[in-house]
Image (cartoon, rainbow, N blue to C red; front, top):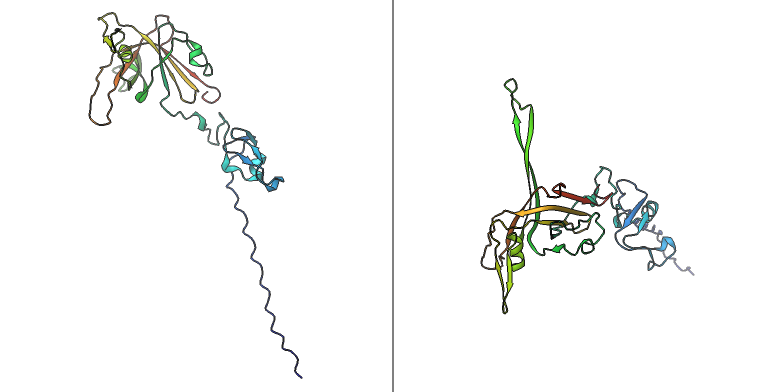
Length: 268
């Protein structure tokens, strides 16, 4: 009697190795600590189920942890630390910031940490603008020429023009008074009246700019608006504005026309 025929045995297939996890690209350089941009969880490699946090946003994270656990894409440079090319990303300034106005002689800020209201209650926020503000500085010179040279042998300063310009986007009697260098506001029943100042009675003011990240403050010590006030009235969403160009003057106090206050080391 013939024995049972055994089916041929198939050759065992080799198991496909699991794909290796992607390694985050290395950071371009090394620093002792990085700053977490997002929560950094404790994973299985650290004996956790992934629900616990090792670092919260804003925490300093040692470089060795960043490299070991692949957190390269979740961290950033600490404030004020330069990259490999010497650039400091945090030094880039963004946003329209905030504009304040005050009478001459108002106490100036001496840092970027103290709230403006705590510096002096006389500083008043100007509110909305059409397109932020602009500070302009122009040094005027005359060339010193001699017959023996084609190029000027020197440039002699003859003066300078400094200004802060912006367009107020809130049409109010108070803003009109600011733009016209003074004037009179009176109240009636349900209305207010504004009348411009008499010629020669205009008043000077102080201006202050503060950046949105509170790392810059610019104090303009004596300002006078001499720009043309042209208030457009157009159809649709085009809004009316009050444009001003405040020229800087030599302060009666003898101080310099302006002072810039910068956070250190971020803006040093």
